[in-house]
Length: 82
Length: 414
Image (cartoon, rainbow over all chains, first blue to last red; front, side):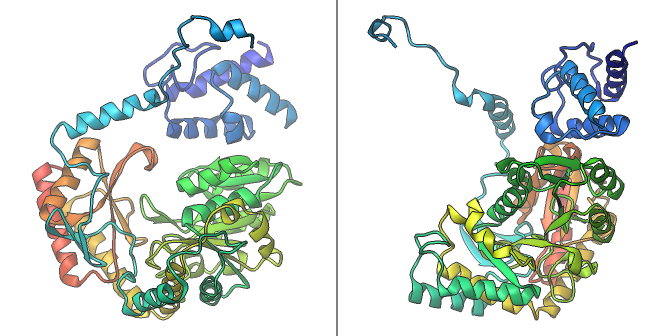
């Protein structure tokens, strides 16, 4: 697996506990519209991602991230910087 | 654009109605109100009899949701100071603090704050909301970081969005989470940790000594919002941070006049030597009219009286502990294990029970606040009770009886 594929798999794993409706996940799955997450779920999920990859995803960045693919890209960028 | 395009017979573009984003909320409200229940967000107080009693729809009602913690709104000295200022200085300043809107009354109010808090500097804003908006957006600029508790008040979040700093959240009251996040930030970046003494939804307090130690370890400045702590925490009533002994480590204390002080307005106090420059650069301070002289005169008088309000503080704590125990004994789920502040939050599982309880209590003659997501943490529905130092012992007894009756009527307790 490439680094990105590994990150994608890990992100999928971390989404699972919050994916109450069992929505199928892909690059283009949207957190708000498809997974129907509210701001509190987002908070818990982002904290889990941050702790897993030892990064910070600021709220400013979160505002730009709508899909799983965009999140994986952001994680990859942040990991490279860390 | 060419003239032909302007004159073309095409039908105008049908842009969406900007209100369509609220359709979900409108439908939810209509469904709720169609059950015949009173609208929890449209209460009118016809007459206010005292800090603890009002007439609502012709009915005498005990007020248990006002944040009027110290009951200063009808204090005779406070009222007299307001009337005198109204006579001497007129009804309003019609201007910004930095132009024509600073009167002797505003300086006296800031002097009262400096004495109350024992600080070098004090700055009065037109509301508590604007105090947070102004302080946070101005202190943390581009490239700086604001680190805030996830359960922070809307005014703190809005202060973040008004500025240009990077915004980082940590899990509510988690010292470990704060430490980890601060540790991941660039060492050379400016950092502002924003905390609240009392979190107003559940009425829980922050573990300030531990949080302050972590923030200082990472070189961050600390702003503490004491909106719900002023008046009755600590020896001088300064707030939770005084009670917990971390006064020297808090760089900025933000507060409000609309709770214990009993009027409206906001402020920040600090010992930072350059503090006063904020008067020139803080937009929510500069670009709004200052408070009317009568308001700052009532605030100053109230603040000075709060310095020596030991008896009131004790009675408020007694009321708070008694209500907490009474409700817990009845079987209600509360926001905290013990009474940590003057806010007692009753947690209910859904909107139906929350509105049912709220409306039944009102029928019985008791007003409490109802709070719903997204204002509440973890999607909970709350009946928020805030006690007053002026609630008499017999009123607290009546309140507990009304909760027992309403709880059994609605079916949330046995």
